[in-house]
Image (tube, rainbow, N blue to C red; front, side, top):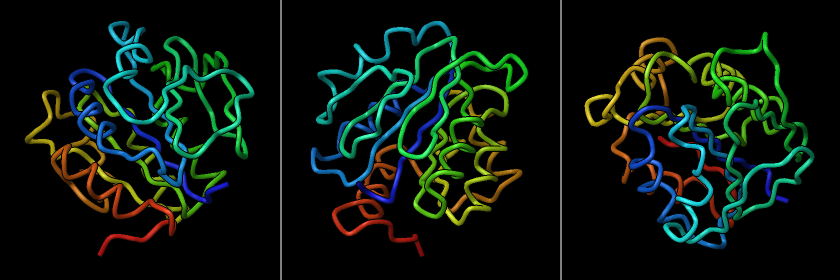
Amino acid sequence: MSDNIIVIGASAGGLKPMIRVLRVLPRNLDAPVVVAIHGGQFSQLTEVLTGKVLLPVQKATDGQRLERGVIAVCPGGEHTRVEGRTLRLGRLPDAARFQPSVDLLFRSAAESYGAGTVAVVLSGNLNDGTMGAQAVHEAGGCTLVQAPGEADFASMPASVVLHDHPDAELKAEHIAQRLLDMVGARGLVRPD
């Protein structure tokens, strides 16, 4: 099993950049990918991504083992946490107002994968992902954000930029290339 994980969070305006990022990741990607977009319009995210990306896409289930080269989609209305090398789902009313919570996903990934965590924040409203990105940074992992000027809704990536100093602010297609450079058969390489 890879010692790396890619976690991607978004909200409003996040679907198009998420597809741009995911569609270029190769089938032999040496890391699991977990994606969370909150908002009712994303209830069919698994179906939307299937056929648009090379990697297999699965709706995350409680107790699911993380597999490299597989995208797990966090279901709406529940929180998804990484525990060791599995996913745990559930309703945690005091954890966050967003379900699924990007902060909770990122924090739990950082706790389980440490420096092997690569977090990506895409378009979205408000500040979900900011505290999680800080946890990834403190664990020695890497945070990439969609350039706020490119995002349809800049609040989420701009909040990370304001509070966390991400490793890179990039256009969506450049995020995909950076992920390919960082996570492959040889593992995580920190960006310069």
